[in-house]
Image 1 (cartoon, rainbow, N blue to C red):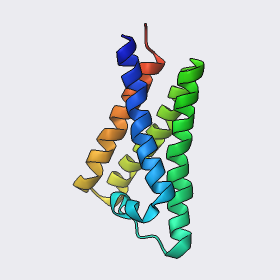
Image 2 (cartoon, one colour):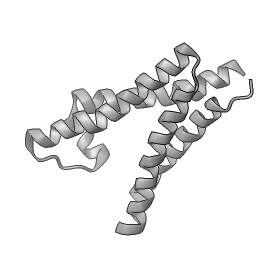
Image 3 (cartoon, one colour):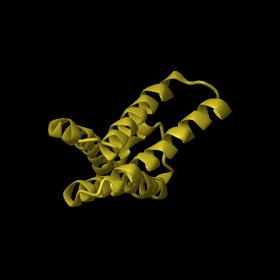
Image 4 (tube, one colour):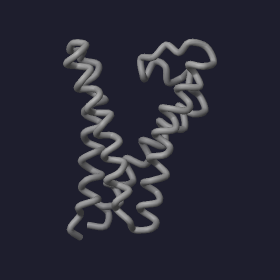
Length: 123
């Protein structure tokens, strides 16, 4: 069961670390992934700060929760990702269905499920 727990926390941590690092240090590489067209330096700064910052702060919470054995951190990141997922659903409703939104939504829901599983783990 310990391996399952490590995967439930480790996989989201690695994924968010990758996204956060690339967003922070190579924001122009993320424009296609996020379907964004930043306007100049300010737009790139927004990708670095808002998107990269959100992902890397989530990583910091997950690592802190794992090291200190305080699973509340997993719930906090699950809430952040949950609000992101709600934003995607609102977009689907308000802006119309676009199939390209579904894969990241599914990934977010899987990450949320894994983190909540780690938070509520019975072992």
